[in-house]
Image 1 (cartoon, helix red, strand yellow):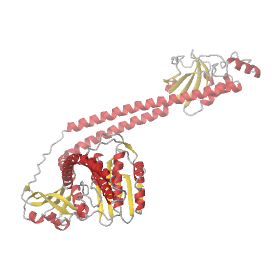
Image 2: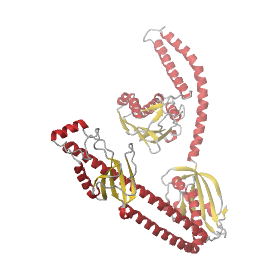
Image 3: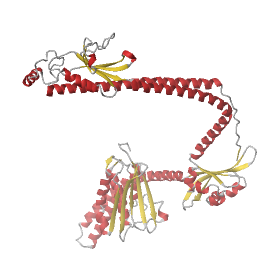
Image 4: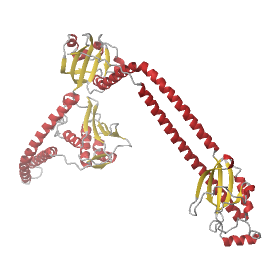
Length: 595
């Protein structure tokens, strides 16, 4: 197979200057709109800040007047002094108390007392239910002042001590006389408005600075736009060609890198030029260490035995074989290999496509196993039904004959042996039916720590009788699982008992439980026994396969069935003479899902 790679020539194009001008105009418009919006926002912010500051000053004056009246029987002249001191604060132009007719009652500037607060323009109306308002006015001399207006109510009967009580206090202190003309009197409801005049020039200076920055920025953008037009006319074709090349390269790299099959490419001299992630996973090799190395020397088995055929120019399609990785693992793969020749007929390299068949083989084995188990289950149900009835009759006759012989006689012992064998056969049939029956789960959210500890309690005595130590390691942050606790406890017990029976001369039974990164709960049961012989590893989950003299061969088959019913996976690792480890992985779930 020969690949002819051709590049289509990309024609250059010229961008119209009107597009650049239009883009510059649009950009300038956007900048101006944003600038106006920013200016309006700053004005609103200025108003809010000044309003808050004015309200705070007025409340401070009211609080001072209220305190002075309650404690020192203040008069109007005392409030006047308070206004004068308050007006000394930064950015405060004046403080004034005005009646509804617009006449100044008190003012931080004493010369204004008794005069109209504002000539030609009345004070903005403040309703009886309105707490405060504000307005930006231009006073004499063109100075703009931010005024905050608020009802001046420190003397309401409800806000001081009550008119009757206050009058009594003032009479006691001798200060009630000569107050008839004083505008600041306790207990008297007066329609007065207090005004705080604040300086807005700092804010206006900041706004003018922003406007100047906007003008400068707009000018810079215009210059840059025209400069971009000139640059674009010089660089347009180069940029288009470069972009097309980058897009094509990125597109090809993404496709090749994330292919689910392994891809290995070599250059004309036979050196490795490319390895994708799937190829690294399948072969166990690393591109960083192999780039530039000779493929014949670096890849396993001369391209898994295909190098000779490829050297002769043959095309290899989907040839199945087994490759041995540097780690010693044997991986079943499907291999395709081709030579790459460009449009000029020149040889540019080779491509090796490797597809991992491990999962396919596993699924095929699982399908065959399920078919076999289904056939055995159907057969087992019929055989068990046919055998149990005669067994009941045999046990009844054995019991009858046992009663016909004296205790300790040979006939009595033979009858007892017959009864025991019938019971053993009945247990085997019960296990057979349990295996053949569909798994009916009742899942519930289960604390795996508690389940493991309870299941281990059932085998601690058996382990102690064989001088076996039990070691457990259960993480504290286990993810939640929904399982049938009874069936899963049966699964764990079978694994415990198998591990204990594998250690005739003592040892260690290990149980580990943790949550892995794939959001799965992992439970590992290990022993330090003799391990499983290599010839038996593929058969341990088959029904009736056992290496024990008295085993039925259904224990691990039932374990496998229960784990699969919980949508889990069961794996076994064993080493002859060093023991075995069975690992169960269950999906984590925060809520129930039908199994």
